Image (cartoon, rainbow, N blue to C red; front, side, top):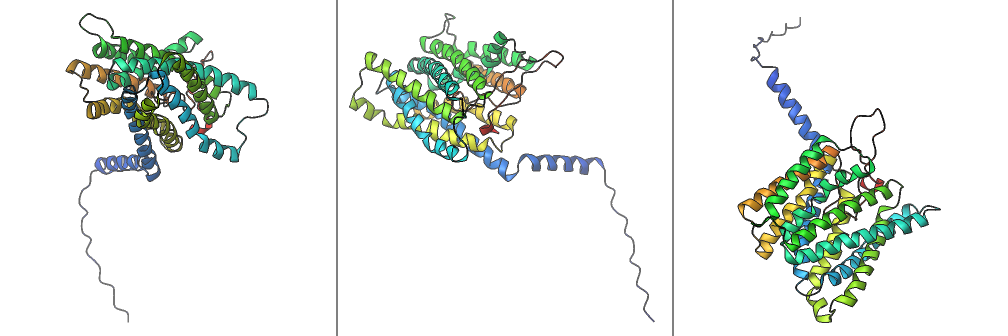
Length: 362
């Protein structure tokens, strides 16, 4: 006979609440989705790009101690164009850089984008001589708020969040830049005007991106246009010496190779895996790193009023980008990647501002 199995006593299970385990499960699942290894690596790369772009404002300030603003921009942008050559070679292996019949659009687009880039970069570079790296970073960053507002001129509809972000940015700008006489300093004024050209440049790049123009080739060609125009102005208006170029070697190399070549590559790779909302927040930190770089490397300081202004401006920039649902290009190099295209809402659609990005940023 088989022995009867001993019956195990049934122990009462401790009472468990159904709310807490489900809450923990939801949080755990969301964290798992957000912080996958691939996403985490992408966000680290974006953070590194933001640091490089933020510190580039310091390089721009230091470079002005040795060469003029047009000389610096000319050499820097031509060097930046050269640094994109490896990326162009890689892209060319997979597909033609210019589709049949697209030569005229590429040429005209490069000339227009390069001209606007030249004006914006020149205003920024001349203005940064008379202001701090931190203030220049935050004022330039206003272009992410200006872009959707300029879109109104083309009949684009702007979300409510953009208006709130613009209001915060204007109040912050007042606290950061206005002196006791309620006037802008020369440097702050030039950088602020330049922010409007950066915004116009974003719209032009976005329009070209919607026509499937190769973004890396477009970036390279417009850098060449900007560099040639800058050097042409420098030849007739600034002293160019070997000693000056030698003294500005490190700032120029940083601005040309790191800020364009390395950081651009990091962004192209990282934004394929990073959620757009996360990327918007991380890339907006460029303005913060500009202020930190100026404080650590140039001993620049901001009073309490200026810090409050920076905080409001940063909140306005974030709100504007997050409402659009896509990342804007980095404030220092708006031309490097294809920018969002503002698309008119058709009758019957909800009021929204759409963004269309080039395939390289997907």
